[in-house]
Length: 130
Image (tube, rainbow, N blue to C red; front, side):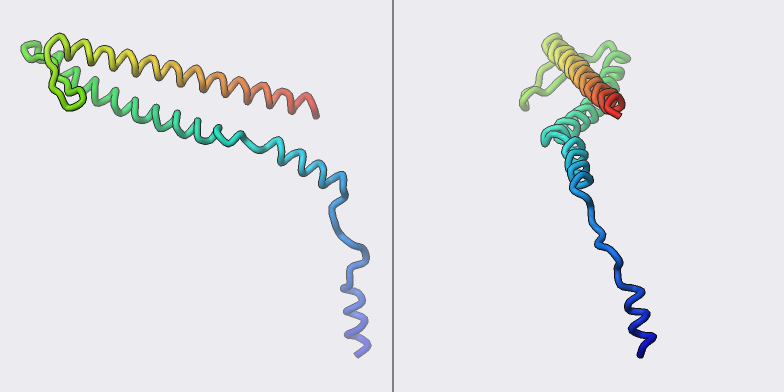
């Protein structure tokens, strides 16, 4: 029975193990810096989804436009709010949609560049602190 007590005594912790208040403060500060604003993830997801939709729409539009351009005799036909439009009116509607898509894609690219710049500045600030 003495051996059991000896082993039990050897396995008992010699000192209490825990984080110091300074370490706890550093962990809290680091976790506070790692949190992103609540809208950042939503904004990036929405921008990515919009880009995908635009790319698919542009591919479909340009594939359709190539077939129209190859057959000069046929006229441009679009459907707007369930109404059929053709001829010059359809062509102007299609061109306006393409212009809006290109403008949106430029806007998204500018926003992505601005976000990248913010991340870059943050990373430079963090490296200077160390």
